[in-house]
Image (cartoon, rainbow, N blue to C red; front, side, top):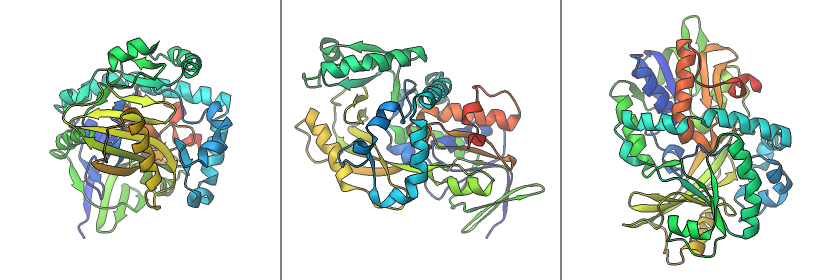
Amino acid sequence: MNRERTDIAVIGAGVIGLTIALELVDRGRDVVLVDPNPPGTGASYGNAGTIAGYAVSPVGTPDVLRSLPSLLFSRTSPLAIRHRALPSLLPWLLRFLRQSLPGATARNAQALAVLLADAGERWDDLALRVSGAGILQRRGCLYLLKTPEALRAAEAEMTRRRALGVEVELIGPDRLAELEPGLPGHLAGAAFFPGATFLDDPGRMMRLIAGSVLGRARLLPRRADRLTRGPDGVVVEGPGLHLHAKRVVIAAGAHSRALARQAGDRIPLDTERGYHVEWDMAEPLLNRPCCPTARGFYFCPMAGRLRVAGTVELGGLTLPPSPHRVRNLVEGARAFFPDLGEPDREWMGFRPSLPDSLPVIGPSRGGDDVILAFGHGHLGVTLAPVTASIVLSMIQGSTPPADTRAIRPERY
C-alpha cells in the first residue's frame, strides 16, 4: 500500500466535493479526491436537475407536522418511512419534529434564503468555467396546483417566499397552457418561478466538472474509513488507503457521519432515499421542470429523455429499493401522460439529510484542520458552488460569501 501525501484531501467526489476541489485547484492548491465511486455519480447524477434558488421552505414545517402520521405510514405518500429503519431513525425524527415547529421553520427558511440568494448566478459562472453553459437552461420552474383550493392555499406560502427574496407568480390555467401546452387541461394553475434554471443533463455536467478537476488533482478510488489527527496534519485511512493531508474536507454526502464523529462532531445525519424513472424520447413533453405539488415529484425534461424524480423515503443506507416507490412515480407520471409505456430505466440514490434542512459547513470541533461540508438534502446540486466558496474562504482565512452561523457544526 502506497503512503501518499497532499496539501488538502477532499473526501467525496460528488458535486460538493468536485466543486470544492475545483475552487482549490484553480488557486494552485495540491488536492487529492478520495471516493470509491466514479466522480459525479450517485445523487449528483440522479437528481431533478433543478437549480432551486426558490426552495427556501424547509422539509419540516407546521403543515408537515400536522400531517406527519399519515404521511409517514402511507405507501403512496410523497414523504414516507421504511418501517424496518424506524428504530434507528427515531433520534433523527424527534429532532425533525422540533424543527417543524413554527419558530424553527421560520429560522430555517431565513437561513436557506441566505444560502440560496446567489446560487443561480454562481451556477452561471461554474457552467462557463467548465464549458457546460449549454446544459444550463433558463426557462423557470412550475409548481403545478390541481384545484382552485390548492391555488388559493398557495398564496400564503408564495407570499412568504417573496418576503425571502424569491421571484414567483401565481398563474391560472390559461397562462399555464401557454407555458406548457403538453400538460392536461384539468389543472387550476401553478406557481411559476421565472428565474429558475435547470440542468438538462446532470450526468454530463458532473463529467465536465470532474474533467476540469482531475486534470489538476489526483483521484484515489478508495473508501475512507478512519481519520487520525497528528501534530502535522490528518491521516486518512481505509482499505488500500493511507493518505497524509495538512487539511481534510469531509464532503462524502450520506456517508459522512462516521468520519465527522471521528473528527469530534456528532452530526445527526441520516439518509433520504431518492428515486427516479426515465423514458427515452426525441422531443420532450415539457419545456421546464414541473412539480405536481400533491405528489411530491418533478417532471424533468432532459436531453433525449423525460426523468420523473423525487419523493422522500427515510430508510437508511442498507435496505434494498422499494418497488412500490418506483410504481408510484410511474403511476403519477401516467396520471398526466397516459400514453407513457414502461420506463426505460429506474434509479435509487441517497441524499444526506439533516433535521433542519440545512447543511453542515464549517470547521470540526476538533480543529480547523478538518472541515465539514455535507447534509445538503435536496439542495446538493443547487448549493454546490455556494458551498465551495464558503469552504474556500475557510481554508484561505477570508470572509465567507454568506453568513455561516446557521450552518456551523457546533449547532449540534
